[in-house]
Length: 106
Image (cartoon, rainbow, N blue to C red; front, side, top):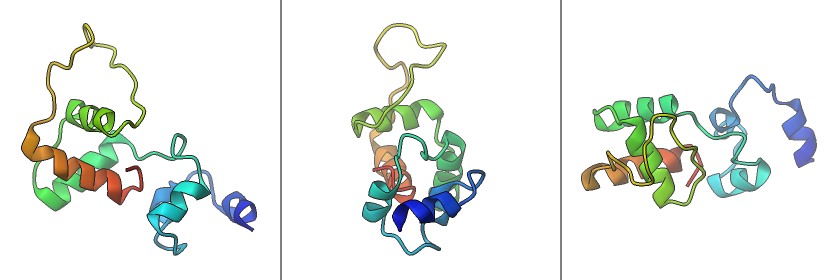
């Protein structure tokens, strides 16, 4: 039944956007689909943080928090060396983690 449900959903619609309408909890949703393929974009995460907390998060902050949470990230094309130049400020980490939880990524 789960496989049939996933195949009925259009591939153009992000599944994390449909999760509330399909009545899945985040935990059930993580096991329903592979989070590697259906992760929220950095833009979606930025928009969520802007709406809820009133500040625009930098993509390097999101990447830093994702790395802290052991979520997959790609190395930025302009990154030099192994250390982060702009790590996420401590007061912003919880806001970005909340956004990741909202999209069932953390």
